Length: 90
Image (cartoon, rainbow, N blue to C red; front, side, top):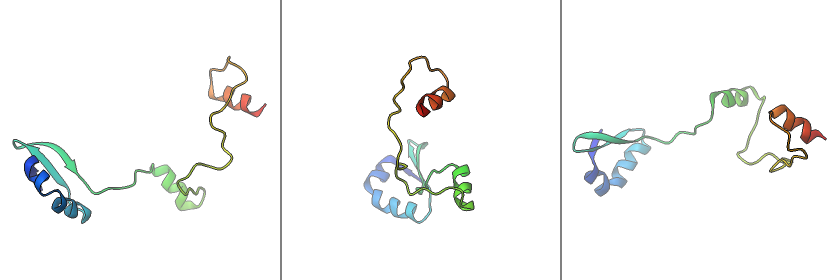
């Protein structure tokens, strides 16, 4: 459904109800599409979803316990991720 900017401002609640029901609303300005309102979907990478489905990974949305933030490096001569891991293990 296409609607103009003025109509979108005046009847936003009405259009948001339609979006909640799965409809997509296109906002136009002088007949030219400028925005789209779509139903909200979680944006989780498909690889993570597959790991969760197989039970190989779980996540409740919070920071993993025991994680150090930030990693403090003992040496300044580190250029690769493997160097960071090795340094962190010391």
